[in-house]
Image (tube, rainbow, N blue to C red; front, side, top):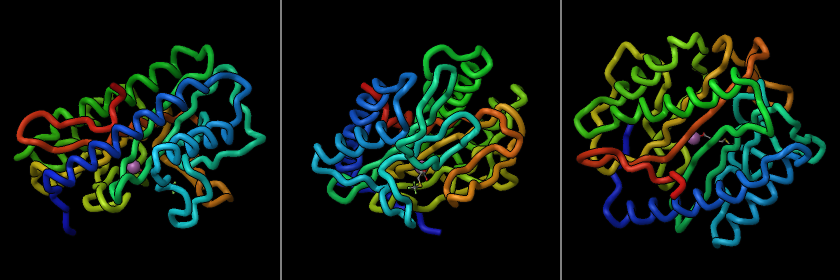
Length: 251
Ligand code: MF3
Ligand code: CO
């Protein structure tokens, strides 16, 4: 395993890649309402990415057929946009998107409410988002990678939620997926030591029920086995000497 340390020049490119991605999310998030199709959101996301002169990094990644992933309700991640799939009142929808700017990748995900949702669904969204922030409190130079994993686990588990184990966060830079893998649950080892200049995509995927997932026949869409709702929250971050910098956060 080799974890890349970005130079100051590379960090500047990562920052810009991630800043542009946060602009894409601003546009996509405004579309979330009953009646919009998951393909409508994909089209806007791809159009905004290309308007910046950037390339969607998910498109054609291992054969993935779209620019973004749109996962509704019990779909955890990697839902394929579909022009017949309309969002409806009460759904929760996760958007996962990334882009390439001058060779540097960004990656982020958010879960949104479609109209009015149940308090239970809102709590799942809120806890998933907060678990990211709990995790990155440990994302400091000198700490170990799995301190992040344990902090996410410690925050989420008391809610009785399932933490998805089959998919993990990752390093990111000149590739979408670099070393190291970043599990969202406690590990027996400590993992690598974190160093300034590492760029990581931390992305808890949380189910209201059990952690077990399966794949639909499209070979992409990951769903909860028990049909419970799932949420996803992801940012690309930079490890510094102090607090981590959240590169994909909306400003
Ligand atoms: N955002 C996903 C991740 O963090 C990548 C989506 S897989 C793709 O790993 F095929 F859709 F690109
Ligand atoms: Co990711």
